[in-house]
Image (cartoon, rainbow, N blue to C red; front, side):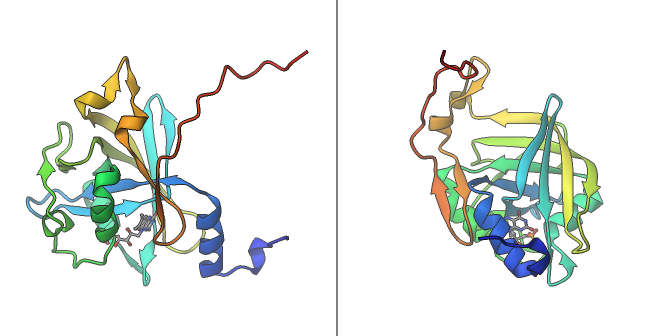
Length: 202
Ligand SMILES: Cc1cc2nc3c(=O)[nH]c(=O)nc-3n(C[C@H](O)[C@H](O)[C@H](O)COP(=O)(O)O)c2cc1C
């Protein structure tokens, strides 16, 4: 079957792309520097763009044509935290995507807690196994939807002690979750370790 992107509208293109680019990691973004007002929302249009220096990117769309709270906060304060949720946080991740009023903190409403960051004012989520403090580097846009692709440089990593050994993350212990299409998520499946690649037989 051939699907011509020029024949798709915003909704059908979204369904095709988000069903095809799977599984996606989840950036659980805390933003806003006002005490007690930390905003929290999940974003799965998320990737790292560079490991050295560490640079992350995620795409924040508009809601009925208006900026989401995350977008407003990042434009205002030029910093945010990308928290990585584990399986135990799945329900909170899903709930945090609801459209809460701008002055309502998802963090306190969902029974989560914040912890201070080290290099920025925006707090991180205490329950998250990994959090990355980010300073906004640039904002890119693609097409005319008003969505903003935030490029942020990681200025501090917070990693739960038991997850980090010999400079590596223990992925099985991390128990990350990913998003598939719509309200569907998946845990990490079986980890398959392959031999060294790059050599063809014969
Ligand atoms: C797992 C998951 C991933 C999501 N990924 C994105 C995304 O990549 N971009 C986006 O604009 N919205 C995404 N959303 C929707 C936002 O989380 C949702 O619009 C949220 O209410 C935004 O919150 P805010 O207004 O506090 O910023 C996602 C929702 C879920 C549940």
